[in-house]
Length: 327
Image (cartoon, rainbow, N blue to C red; front, top):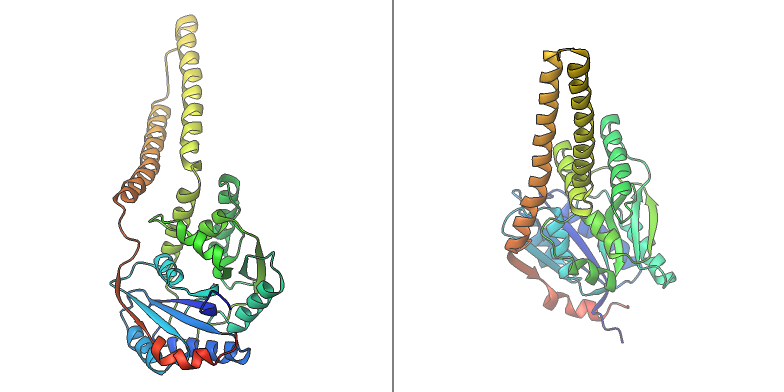
């Protein structure tokens, strides 16, 4: 007899997904139910301001499979929502999928079959094959992966998303990383384990609009760079050393020309330019060090990553159905 109550736990973070909740649940139940996979669904309401929570209550009331809803006291972000969902899983496998209908349960079945068919695979991560995005955004993403892969000690696979299925030891390892500023792409790479990268094509959103603006993506990239590498600090060390060396050489040339050639120092514009350059680098350095110091300060406070307002589940209502579902 299995030590797990279900075979698969489906974690769905939700933020203002009122128009998608029912469809996500119904499609998952239909697709997974056809394969007779015992599963539970865990929705995390990340402080939605629309009718998402009302829809989730309705899902709990009508569901014939185990459903649990974690309701946050406010919006803590998708990273916190994923962690809260993983903390609730009771299955042997756990999969994270978005609540916007872009990630098909059919892909979940492919992940499931890969884990079932090969004990050497610990995690199956979905990699989007083609992305419809602007040239500027695409350029910044490529640049980000090039920079962080050269600077970080772990590998970041371009296009790999949070949409992935993990065995329970992987879930436990991810949960053991309790840092406040979470960058899941880095955490998944940091914990290791054998990961299979599965290409897939994301669907169009069924309702609502994306919550990721360019500003949020840029901020997320900064979280990754600062969270998983000290390259910015090394850049300051190297640039400071080079500038000091150049300044010393320039000063030596000026002194030699003045003493031996009687050539007075010229170039007011050059002097002002050098001052502005050095001032800008100093401000940049203070900003970078401030980012690291500020994050360290917040980490030392040991604030909770999220706060639950309520937790709903239908385990009593779904008990009979769960017992009759083959594992």
